[in-house]
Image (cartoon, rainbow, N blue to C red; front, top):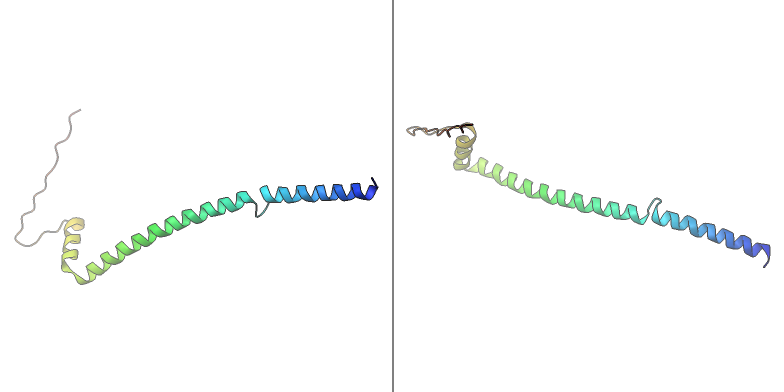
Length: 98
């Protein structure tokens, strides 16, 4: 077997090893592609949750702009306000004995 065939074999073997390294470990490797796909899925889930939250907030803002019932309910729950003529009762749970 001539020396240039051996040299060609060694060069091809080195190229194969470099390509295998790049496929499994290097930039653009299968592991990196899998990790990026996982990141995309996570970001898509976060985006979906944020879109649903935006829809709820948009509906709440719209109801606060147009309806007095929503403003009244918000004032009652957040600020503890009552209507004129209503009586406010506060129920306090008894403390647990130790």
